[in-house]
Image (cartoon, rainbow over all chains, first blue to last red; front, top):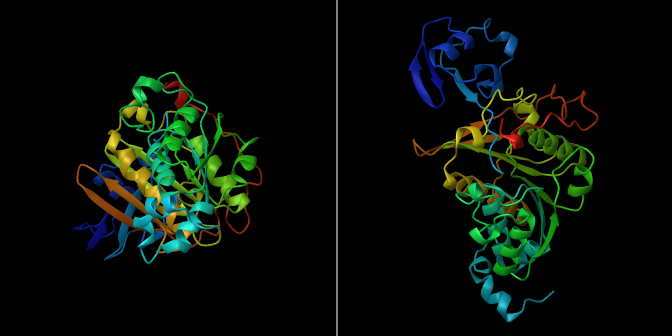
Length: 69
Length: 268
């Protein structure tokens, strides 16, 4: 199936979960990443349970701290 | 309030815009923006807001200017090293535009002082570099129903979102809780290109200006990300509302401001 990850369309195995995608995409600090699927927040407890669907749009949102000092 | 001839000339490039005009420039002159953090993000934001004639600008920061700040914090100069950042920032803003009243607050924001700091301002800019402050600013703005601009920069990357009460998700909707101490690197630990502050801090100023003018679309319900190496801006849509958010949800679990452990200042 095809999904869009951070704006890029790619083919992934059927049944791919968010947890698998995090590994495949080598997401840094995955523990603290927020994930949206089709513009809705994915619940962390579902990361290893819910399979993504064909044409799903996935975004990884990272903590970004800097600014002052 | 009539414009002086000098003001008509100073703001001529604003006044000629149909989205601004004389009316909009008056709104800016009557506008009040608080910038928390006179650093990489706060410096360009403060300078563009001062130049734009935002009439009252508050700036809060407890630190002094350090030589290592000057690579990105362009509101301060070499002569300012050792000076309180808020004083150095005020001097620069005053020299840029005498129309602007600059209020300085030489303090870090805490649960004790933040409600008092934000109460007189129309829009808040989060230019801080640490998560305890970012969550505190978010929670205080949600509680006090104040719009604010969140931003963060690190290495070659930046992010930005705008919160407007009742119009979209808050920072805590996106990131539920601060990461544990040292789990996510800061600029001091990871480095940052100085111009990142220029790009993202200027966008924060732009959001404040649009909010005051009431024009265009704000980054509400969206997170803008900037990757300088790929030279790519992306806008990620966020859910319209997050009913289980700890602070702005239907049944908020957080009813008091929280001072999370501050770690970034000591650079550990």
